[in-house]
Amino acid sequence: MPKPRKTKFRLLIILRNAVLAFIGLLLIGFIYLYSVSIVKPPQIADVSVDKLNRKELSTGFYTIGNNWFRKSNTGLYEMYVEGEPYQRGIVNGLLSKELVIKQEVAFSDQINKMIPSKFYLNFLKYFIGWFNRHLAENVNEEYKEEIYGISQSASNDFQYIGSNYQRILNYHAAHDIGHALQSMALVGCTSFGTWNDRSADSTMIIGRNFDFYAGDKFAEDKIVEFVNPSKGYKYMSVTWGGFVGVVSGMNDQGLAVTINAAKTSIPSGSATPVSLVAREILQYAKNIKEAQSIAASRKMFVSESFMVASANDNKAVIIEKTPDTLDVYDPHQNSIVCANHFQSKGLVTSAQNVEQVKESASDYRYKRVVELLETTEPNTVQRTVDILRNQKGLQNANIGMGNEKAINQLIAHHSIVFEPQKKIVWVSTSPWQLGEFVAYDLNKVFAIHGLQSNHEVYESALTIPADPFLATDDYKKFLSFRSFKQKIADKENVDINAFIKLNPQYYHTFVLAGDYEFNQHNFAKALGFYKTALTKVIATKGEEKHIHEQIKNCRAKLN
Image (cartoon, rainbow, N blue to C red; front, top):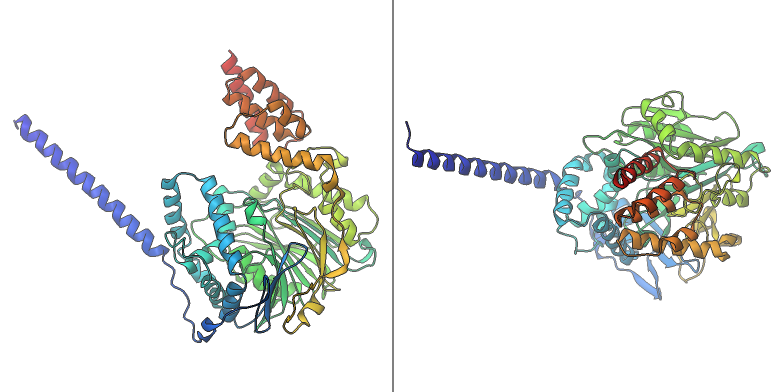
């Protein structure tokens, strides 16, 4: 029989060895994660463009050869770039250097705000590195070179996250990663179009809200970019510093593309980012058939709808793509509507899509657009803007300001209208889609061979006036409502009754009031607020479930 002292000593040795083995496994794991997360930049044959410098011809107006960058009096930034991929990237980065840096700071600040724990942030860094370990393999060389060029102007303050190139590349998959991890559509976008007898002048009109929210600062500096690539078609898109993908854009062939997220399963790794698939379509397709061929050739790891409007085909369709399947929805009529669910025969009955229609706000928004299109006269650009700005629910119900079921959720990064046959595009100015919509004629902009003086390039005669809502007391109340929401999120004490008066038709006002009182242990008050929330138009089934659960919790506390 072994002596107790020896037995204890052996147990300590076993425990020590186990701890060392565990630490070793952790070390191996981190080394592996670090190694797979390293992304080598593309090999550039001609780096002579590295010597380029921008010229500031007047305050904030920069040029490099024919390339230029300026801030419009509308508040929008405008940029024109041309040439080979790496050259475009270098020029883009140099011209918009301040915005490339500012955008990353804004994005980083929002991540830190959402995930305040340094431990989880560090874990997220390695997870994303692992998740994106094959990202570069799924991005074509042209776009890798362009991204690498831009990365030369990125900030060196974020090297602890990854190299400049690695970070800028990964940001192009940020939408996809967030979408995949939450297994939901992070952007509740709405788009629609009319043509032939559904448009007043019979030409095609496409409108879309890009309801992507990554913090107020992220949406402050929008860029209307005009690109003249060495290969493919010239195109414009609404973008931001450091981003070469496309979320909304139109090329000089009169082909417009917008993206709408759909419900997706959680994948095991990355593929081609959605925005780069849209970019490739815009750059290399002149009709729907070519757009479909490009979409089919790319592997994606989330589900997405691409609305493609083609002047050459005189119609619009929705290319619906999942990680495994592609189908096309053709309405076979002179109008089309797209929210965040699939409509094609091959995907409309899929389990995930059925759940999306049932659980989310997508179907409600879809029906609201259809209702507005059917109850108005033949469509015009002005009517399209009016629909994009509409805050009401079905049958013009007051569902509160900021409701996800509204077409205008008061969170849009940008709103945009295309006339593909005329090659004219209208872009919203801040705030959201409430400011003026300014028009750009692609034929005229691309006819400029170098901008040598700082002047406006938009078509002032075609400007759509700002939304009258901006001059109302309700708009002021909504701004105060947002301020109150932030204070509640920061766990500050607020006058909850004053908060409710700011947006009394919005269900979420009462959910927040209920949560506030519940955290203050005022369970009777919280119960009353939750019950009131149930009498309002609630955006999603998940939120409705939360309200019911909180009602049960209140009753349990009171009993």
